[in-house]
Image (cartoon, rainbow, N blue to C red; front, side, top):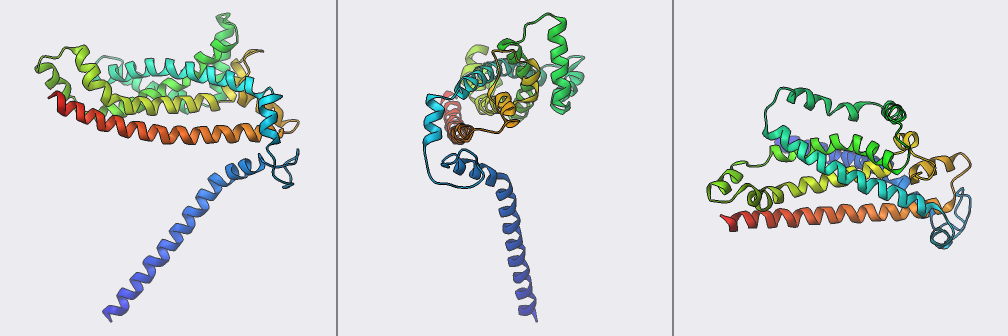
Length: 280
């Protein structure tokens, strides 16, 4: 009787595992299958991606020799890198201030951080456009950089605040008790512990900025159009095959960036723990 019950339980567990694996397979297929299809059709010897006609590298060659998409990609990279740098400086300092100091408007500032995150991008885009028009601020690269930094800063603050909440502040106090000043403590103790959060914040900000369409469409100037805005305008008349080639390259670069970020964070974490032990 007990053997029968055990066998039924094992069958239920196996059935549950199979259903769970099937469910996970369906979810991953739904997420990644469109990307796989896009990469495959970037090698398609057919101008209209309705069916597979054969393998070719023509569209990659056309992308680097005749297409103007690379210029829009350069615009996107300039905006994303600059917005990420501004977001990191403001966000890291803001997170440190919110975590280490007590003041009257602290709760208000903490709650207001979520406004740019939950507010619709259309509303934020219109608001920024009205602000620029009121201040007579010209639309261009700088207007987009400031706009992207606006919605990236809250993400940096939240990520860094979560990182700092798990830090052992007594290590800094012990460093200063042993004779190190605040600058030495920051560079030898605090910064190595913050770098994993800084890298995650930078990666998040860069991804949000380079992928933005709606806000960029509102605040971009005539010579500062980014790649997502350009691709959106091309959808109306039909996407060209070199778009698949460019986005496939971007996917590859992002995958390598994720792997590099993981490796760097693991090395930094190992090195930081070694430095702390050596220092003390």
